[in-house]
Amino acid sequence: MTESLQSHYDESHEDYLLLTPGPLTTSPGVRAAMNQDLSTWDCDYNDRVQWIRSALTKLATSASGYTTVLMQGCGTGTVEATIGSVLSEDNRLLIIANGVYGLRIAEIARYLGIKHDVLDCGELGETSPEMVRDRLQSDPFITHVVLVHCETTTGRLNPLPELAQVVKEHQCCLIVDAMSSFGGVPIDVDGLGIDFLISSANKCVQGVPGFGFVVAREEALAVCAGRARSLTLDLYAQWRCMEDNGGKWRFTSPTHTVLAFQQALKELDEEGGISARYQRYRDNHRTLVDGMQALGFKCLLPVESQSPIITSFYTPDHPAFEFKKFYDLLKAKGFVIYPGKVSKAPCFRVGTIGHVFPKDFERLIAAVKDSMYWLSEAPATDSLSSCPEKVITA
Image 1: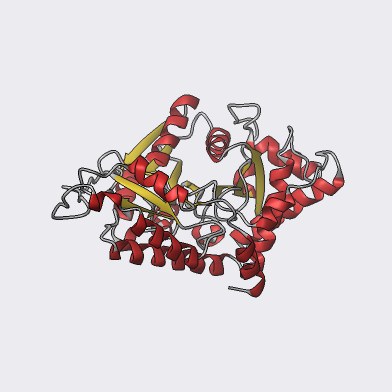
Image 2 (image 1 turned 90 degrees about the vertical axis):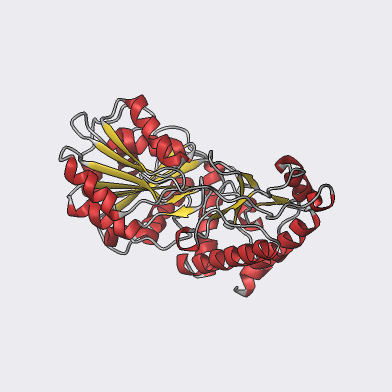
């Protein structure tokens, strides 16, 4: 940790830490950057937009031929803008899903009337290259493939390099929802053959909510004119407006969020870039898992599938345990965690991204230990944590 980054650490955390996959805990510098009003028509603002677009593209790849488009709204809105703008009426989309966010893309496709198929591996199922290869070989009409890199339903990091290779072997357009991984996990869009990568301001770059962005291969984006199924979610039109007008957004942009994001990008560079942030997140995750396991908690996923973004733990198999009470006790001690989202396994989640450090997770472990009220309220069972009877596969 650099001396400057350490100083950010010492000044922060006045209330409680957001240990979630986003919105997340931000630095004092990021929050302070919003303390300014700028006009969306002024070059002072639009120059910043252009700087952000260039910086994001460079983070995604050193290759030429790529651009970045910013889109107002939530991350899901940017996913919808991409799906709705990239696929024509003649195209067919394969959606690889092993969690809520993959299935949400399928819901978007249904709403928009896009021809699609879903390879649903189940919430606890792994997605293998062989499964994708089999599906692509069995359906020659598939032209596009979309997958979620880090599925925060469980915390699984899907094998992007292996899956991308199969998609490109079949000459399909590859769309990657890297909402909760870009900026925190190294990804080279050109090296992997990614045509469209989608993420959001309030994730691993450590900005605040307000817009999403798409890193796109210019050649793939250029053929999308007239395909959009929505006026405001027209990715191609937004790109052309920014290109032709020096960073101008088509409609009112979240100016304060943009200012915060520019500062967040500067702090990412100061930390040492994505590789350094990835290492900090891994250190956070290791501190968390080691400490929770020492207290008897068990991880939902095997270690080889686990991301350093968010981790699911089985809830204690104890008659006195109530998640809401556990949550409130931790919040009172300065930590906000996440409820579980897996339908077939009782669990809760803890995020390890944002302006948080291993020392924060050492403090969290101490807080968890002090909050295990159920151990004194009812007789303990043989095992602290319940385990699933089986793993769901495709």
